[in-house]
Amino acid sequence: MNEIIVAGIGPGHPDYMLPAAERAIREAKVLVGGRRALAQFARPRGEGQLTMAVTGDIDSVMQFIREKLELSSVVVMVSGDPGYFSLLDALRRHFPPACLRVIPGLSAMQLAFARLALPWHEARLLSFHGRKPAAERLAYHPGSVLGMLTDRTFTSKTIPAVLLAHGWPPETRLFICARLSYEDEQIVATRLSEAQELPELGGVILIAVDETEKKEGDCK
Image 1 (cartoon, helix red, strand yellow):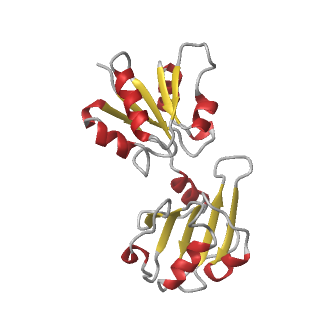
Image 2 (image 1 turned 90 degrees about the horizontal axis):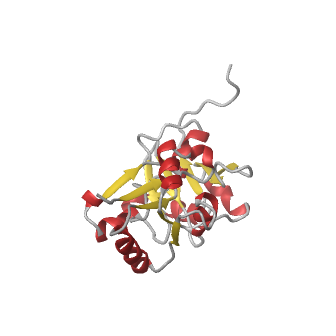
């Protein structure tokens, strides 16, 4: 029975992709994904792999998958983890869950918390990607940890102002995590009140940490 295999490809660098996803992508007869993902992971043209790039025309992508599913399984690459703000939502609206097999991936959010050696089991995870979270999700509570996806509108400059307007203390620690997993990865530590003075970055991970107690220094 043919199926749609939704493969999480991680934050970008192949080192952070699960072997199961890599194998599914390599063996796929039909491969769907963003242009950057296809350029990075699709087989060279002429080696028997049919591809389609995901664009803003999601209906066309779904129609392509439906047509090809009659002949073969289809592998759909999504960045990060499929369960976290990915094309999986749209696939579930167009196909029954029984048609879907999901291979999880490492999200950029997970990697950001890992880089900071910061547990995230009690963190609030929000997306500013094409949306603004509800006020109650943005509200400040002592000891809060907030992980945020950003875009070109809600950025490392505009989001701190939003948090300050919702009662977050100006001295709240803010970590700006850019290009995670790549050679030019950059993590900038600042505070909400100081973020306006730094270069504006979108499409990054922001982590706000209200630290009432913190341990600085080396590993001794």
